[in-house]
Image 1: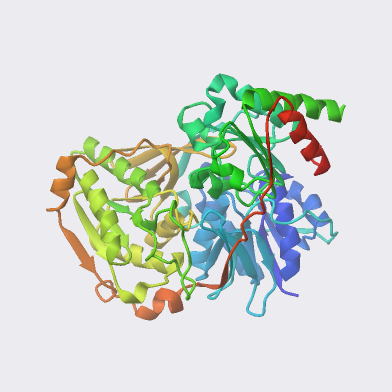
Image 2: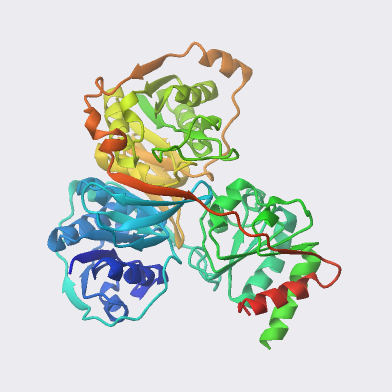
Length: 320
Length: 261
């Protein structure tokens, strides 16, 4: 069976959920061989093996953290040369897409980004993507070279499928470009304790209607009652009420959770581009004419300052 | 020392229009107005700010696209860029990101550059991979997704705000920079700028001029193939209730029924 390279996104050995989802998709088209780089790479092997990795190629070097992106491309290319895979799958994070893009150029292959599904086809893997603010569903494939595909979080279930997961050291030679962009300092983002926005099963977002940074605690309280991530519309971010890292939409992050709750968000096309593939959509807005209501499974026309706290209290009561 | 800046821009269908695919599964550009991709305005703005700080800088805006794409160049020129290059060729129709990036890279090399600036993604394809691909093709450092950028003494520095950390980056020129929508509001063209843009040079290049074979680009030459594009069915009308004091509770009941609570 053909081997499929899966790039592992992990934090000091803790594998992030989108990588486990990738392993589910990879098994549909071949045998997953995982590539884990950086500090703690070997510690990823156990969980990768539980989810179907037949092999885990690992490498660590200071270059991976001291320089931007390219050292990781050098390593992924080394893995590609060693394995000759049928496809390369990478999580659709900002960095993941850049790594995949540069690898694709080097190996002379086409690239597909932000796939939401993947299946085996007669002419190689067929990817599903959302286009034009998710108003279209597009199926495409790579027609030249080895398919390089990045996959959005929440695109497949995480499934246990025990495999050997044999750890092998990957020999990496860094090229001249590897040290081109130096990372001179790194300030970790303060953890909120909430799930990562793009990976969360539930996202609760606030927009213009929240009317001030000091009111966002209402949105956060609802999110916490559901174990959800917090998102914000561009209007709320541009007004300085919430960090840009939480922006959902065309110029921010694209999310695809099981449940999306929009509060005080009118639903401009730019926002819809980032959340329209959510499975269940709920909105609370004063304006009955807001375009967001065209998308919802359940909508409440009302003042979010009354509805959201009542909802939060009711959820807490129901959860006991 | 002069600083040659090339800004890559894209002409995209207006996102507020009813965007469709054509029969050959490429983007229908006839029925929806086009415009300079909003995210590229930030790239033009940063180029202008960098040029302001430099002793002697020249900003060239570059686009690959059909005839109408000149509108995007005019917008950038009216914001203050010095000149424009339009790569236009019938054989480019249907080019994917790999094919387009090949054309851009050749054009950038032909134009001559110290610094290439792009937006973080286009607002139509929204892939976000072109900057990294261009850096790889040009063989220069990528300093991407910057929310702050500065160029001084042949060195570009900037801040990249990632999911888990904020990083300070540094690279020597020549280099490729991409900027986010957090890099600074793009200026509106002034009346004077709009008038001045009419006199600025716009060069037109075709594939032959760039020594690119037609089978390396276009629908046939692209590295990916679209098999189908299906309009998603409109979402079935959901339940909408008016809050008369119990809106939060009714929403909770819905969430419980859907097993979210």
